[in-house]
Length: 217
Image 1 (cartoon, rainbow, N blue to C red):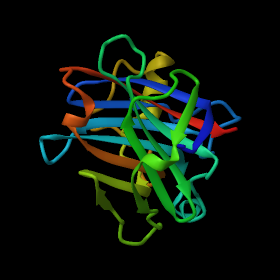
Image 2: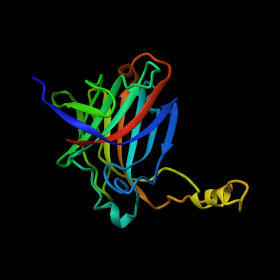
Image 3: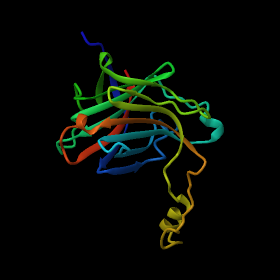
Image 4: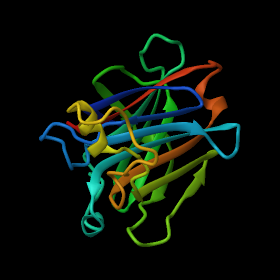
């Protein structure tokens, strides 16, 4: 009998993917801001191997270098990537990641036993795991079942000129500067990255993709 763990939605971020997707949300409600449940960005793009698709979910944004070493994934918070390959905006496949000890374990892509705010993890069906990389150390990756995995701190790759954006909203500027000022320069995030053969995701030409964090119940 398969062992399952029930997870309930904590926070969601919706995105739609083509070849490359970026979706950002760096400031959330006080209940989740700065916690393991706080998603900042999601990226979906073609891998260096063109037969693969890469999914990257960043959490716990605005980490200073001093705060990054103490930041950690929470064993009671699952990161879930939802994939709709039929165009109805309901997940047909999920990829799940959850920490246990010093490793991140990945599950899927597989059809979820339920859709929406409640999810189950099939513990017996892990696709692979990777040691969580430490801040300042050489990043650790692993390859299992034709998939590649990473979990750990990274420099925040999202570029946004928040000061100029606020000036535009306030009527004090007509547009963005070129080049702009990277508001997130020098700040870090905790990232989960998984590279998956496209063949595992169905035959659709377009995928709708969104990520969630869900707390263990």
